[in-house]
Length: 489
Image 1 (tube, helix red, strand yellow):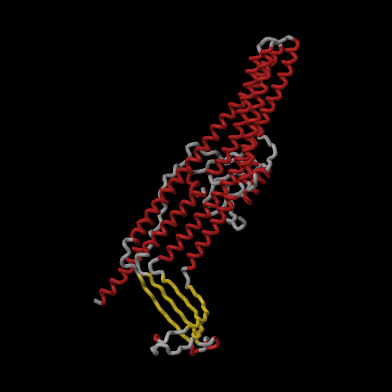
Image 2: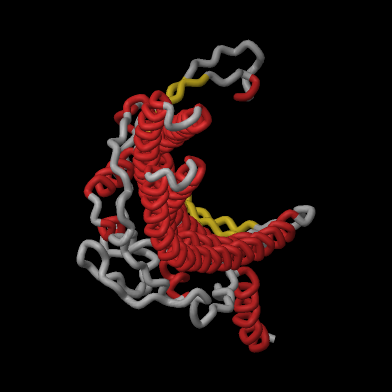
């Protein structure tokens, strides 16, 4: 029987450990396409002379200064201000500190907990409790104590280690979320900045149209006064002038709201921020961003990294839930002294000590622990599904922006040709009208068409800049080897 017991005991212990330990984490299989459908652009030289390159495995690294590729000092300054003062980024930084502290709390369970206590007590017992006749005089007594305590939980079934793993993964997930917020803030600043500049360029185009309309009114007023044209042409010229002015006023509202949005991103009151006028005149200096390989997206995107760390934390919590169903062993020690005077507390004769070990486990809990295991396993299933969704969303965002840049590039080429043709048509219409060979309506149509095409060209210019930033965001931004720092947030 002893031999059988000796052989069975290790097997039982191994089965118990296996039953309560956290399952081995397995990375979910994701069907990663060989290449993005929209194709991969070759590595190209950016505006600042640097070269964009394929991403390397670097999930733990923060984004580099990708905005420098736009070669725009004003943009550099705005992003620097937002990184220091944005409120959402400060919230994310505070959450990182909390998560790191929680991981530290979990780590503390790995080592013995030691404490010290010093106290005094004055008490009077009743005569009856001392076995004396009722009403016997009993003097109060004073006692002093000093003690050193220690306790330690032996991690028999992995509760402590699983809890530490879960807390560490949670902290890593929150740090990845911080990086995601940082990238989002920087990208939002860049996109809002380019929208503001595109609006300035559109306003410049409208102001040019207003000046042309004013000149038309002056010319038509003189010709009307001389009797060369009727009131119809003069009224149409005034109508076109008023309409152009109204459009310019309406666009000012768009500029104001965009400026206010930029102020919020910078962490400033809208009333204290004014952005200078800086029309976006040329999109040829925008950096060409390569799409890279879909597999690199799993290494670069901070939201995907956050989802993966969340899976690891959920997996570790299964171990914590399983361990609760098995015995817990706590070892404790208490030593010190007690005496009637404080000076006697530390004498050898006043010493006292206690050593103890307590093993406890639940017997009847109404299915609480079993259901907690089921809940933990379901939480893992949820986190796996969230991870898959994050990956699918990331692929779609890159495809969207690659397609957007491709289509916008084609639109820009066509609209540039249209601008040349529209300007030629407007010049010819002006000459024909001045020579009396065409009506004023023909001239208005040519000028109106030119103004419309020029505004479309400006809008496309802004869309290309905004979409370029969106692609950088979708790809996870640039990378460097600097450590993550959030202490200043």
